[in-house]
Image 1 (cartoon, rainbow over the protein chains, first blue to last red):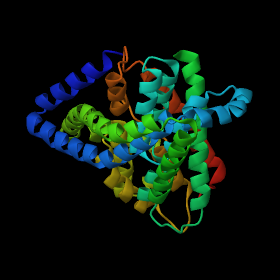
Image 2: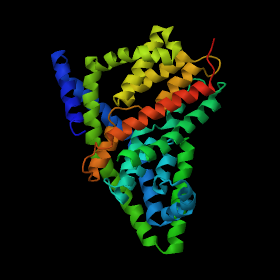
Image 3: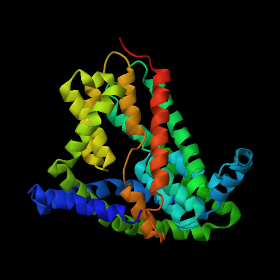
Length: 168
Length: 190
């Protein structure tokens, strides 16, 4: 897995040079685009990171996880991941903050840390996507579709836990 | 949705402060209020480098036509999944370009294609084609989740990309699940 990123980078650069593209100019344009992305996620990141941090350090997070523990023990489900699963469909920047806070608390190499990374990487900000893409807001069947998308998110949550237990 | 995030943050603050008053952790909470906002600046600055670098690489790939090639490669299997795109060349190109851009992590480039694609697929009510297209967008399909990898790197992961096989497996199966769910819930148009 260590090789995949360098290979991809070399391939893209090499291919572009063979095709005689102005690689440097294209790259710089992309970087400017990336800066805009970072600027856009910053406000959410700041707010949610602070909110989650306060929630965690006050002990309320442990309280919540403790309250949910019996439910999760029955289903053999890791409670630590629930906060991330709840915010993931709502806000991309928010999920990033929760993931960061989890990586910091449990460690990036821990099982919980890896699971959080997998879940963050394999689900999308469902509500945001729907808000942007749904063409007619009052279309028949929209409600049914939202249920469908959320069911799919739930499935992804259980699947992430299952697959992480299996191969990580 | 934006209001919901506001409420969630308020509730987090509210219970955080309430808990700290009851359990005497207010010292820590005050420290967090003063410290975490500046930590989030550090986090964004750490991530900015990686996000910008890959955004640059992917823009090179886009301008060279690699994404177009991949989109053309996708158009046949997608035609089987989303039959409506076979009828219209423009819609087909929008839909395939949207999914191809997302696959390579070009979220910004994908959005305009996605909006035009879903507008092209829209009818009186939600059709199976539109629902399939949207579910492929809400199940993230991304080859290399660079932001998460950067986050792992910043937090001292031994190998930030070791999660990739798991991520790919989860993505594939959740897409299959989403597509099947749409098949069950939305009937095909005549």
